[in-house]
Length: 136
Image (cartoon, rainbow, N blue to C red; front, side, top):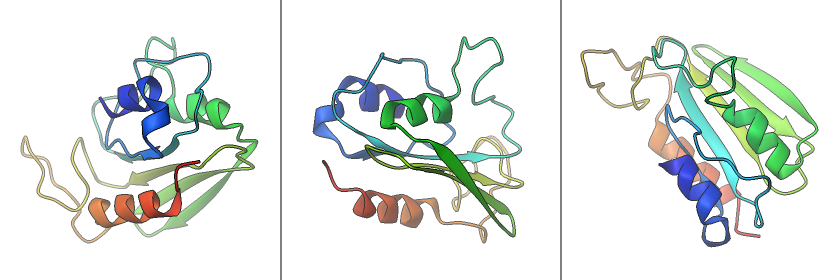
């Protein structure tokens, strides 16, 4: 749903932050830039995309939307952050949490999965990202 809003109403929002989200809806180009922060768990049993592109890689799609030219990888204990750089029209960031399944980082997980509490507070990270990318 979050990706859908970013693709369908880009003139109304500055950024989206799906957590363990899948990108089903794409368009050739976004008429207005929408920055992306994607958070996912390395142990998530639901794949983020597939090799046949039936579900496209959201980071590659958003990099193309925003004109990003390369990436930088940062690692911290329990986290890997992929930051797209050289983006002409916004920001693209993907945070992967080690040990996290299909759950919201920093909260108790549903379906019996464990959520690594101490690694990241998704709400704070998302809010900080939203504040850093004003609507253009």
